[in-house]
Figure 1 (cartoon, one colour):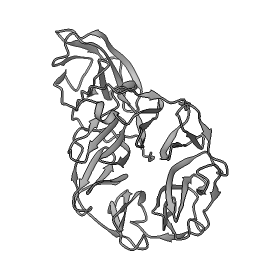
Figure 2 (cartoon, helix red, strand yellow; figure 1 turned 180 degrees about the vertical axis):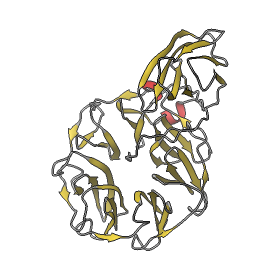
Figure 3 (cartoon, helix red, strand yellow; figure 1 turned 90 degrees about the vertical axis):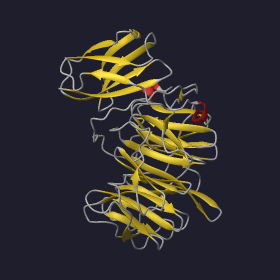
Figure 4 (cartoon, one colour; figure 1 turned 135 degrees about the vertical axis):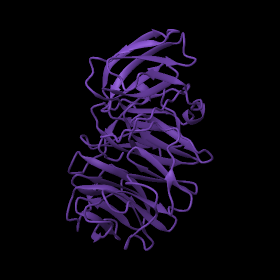
Length: 400
């Protein structure tokens, strides 16, 4: 996961997703009180970084063990693996600096010498050099974290949110006013602005020859190595923050506050795969993938996993004709959905913080539609979520 604010840059557009989901999602035994910030897998072990309980690890999603010995804080921001020579090494960026493990998380050693701030975030390792974003800017290490030196990326008011290896180049995504993408061609020593056509960059990923960048609620892509970018959010719910993404094989996996999605390298649209989770995976903020499992962390509902077949056993996304009138709403509105008459459904209203604020309807969908009274809600932006158990629809509306 990557910590971003949950204030949504919402538009007035309406987007509906109807997905058939036959794959089984299972909630892990990790207590939901764990505030998940990142997910990593190596071999048959899953590592879950949290903001309040260190690093937890498991091989079966049922039995969990603390993997934080030696780390001087419970607030973990990132956890990554790196191949250094013939060894597999884990790194963790935390609220108390950088830690390194040569024992697959059984024990950790602080490697923060030279950092002027221990408040660390985005982290990068390619087996040769390390980069970390801190409250005092970006630092670089050539000796596995034993010593760090500052490097200049972006304006003084900007924060580096992510790094990505792209061939022999390294890319950095930045937030706040300035250039939003920087590139280094000398292994992270010097950086220059690069690319155009997008806003703040919180996340970067590469799928085949295509680059993806997430900017708050928007997705962009580039097919010319990052020189030019264009919108690529087809299939995602507009106005909902993109929180995390990763790639494996031919798929890009995306965690958003409206659910989890995938896109195949041959596709130009995202497809939801979490309709089988509570509220369709509402408030998902982290994702991890192995050859066997897809794993999502949810802000409110803990850690969930499914067999990797979930990406193919889920039906295709489709736009569904749904009408909520009037919108904006004063007190009452009417809901109709083409082809849903007679289906047994449950409908509820959520606010932009992911809280369910009212039940709207439960039962067989009437032919004449459903009347909804929202007079008790304060003015603002809300999401009406309608599910028949297999499909999920989301309708954004404004309460005046």
